[in-house]
Image (cartoon, rainbow, N blue to C red):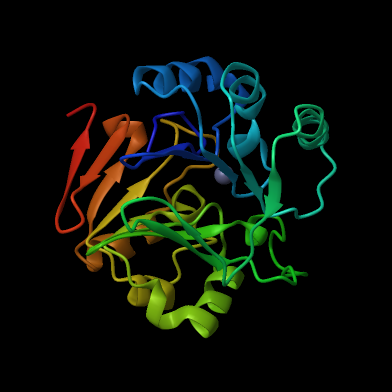
Length: 252
Ligand SMILES: [Zn+2]
């Protein structure tokens, strides 16, 4: 989980592939570019845009310009910002394969590693606190005994739907804190089903939203999760051999 301030960018490297889940904000696009370069990546096999908010899509303008992308996955939730429209136009111009992800799909990577899509459903949630956040693509990354749940900015309405449809599959060893530790998310029932050993929160220091919310932190602490935060720890690197895993902080 890359330190991109108040935003999300998650880089997954398997033996043969590089996958970027969200691209941070436009303000950190150069930083994102150098992370990708430092990792020795010359092609992104897949880019997943969990939803079209600027703190997830903003860095795409740089990524799409500077590195070949083999496949883009998007929720296709209808959104009208200039950033989203420009991105769609560029994808079309560059003829990058583009497809929608919805719950029930699975993306097979290599070495038996896969991403299972747990949200959004084909029919988007409407009338919620934030329908676009609730359209976030939620992925469970599975590699043998290791698993990590990538939640975008899914809020309680999406969490409830996942509990209904995928309760048994939610259990994961590591959780990416949904919606930067906001109190709109991490509902007690959802946390109980995921039951992670560790949680990683992607957020900026002294952010305007006052994330993470103290009530959410209390829930994480009560469940005895190991808590990692990009605002305090910088980039958080999780390495797994499919049996165990280690979590390394950039800053101590
Ligand atoms: Zn966000």
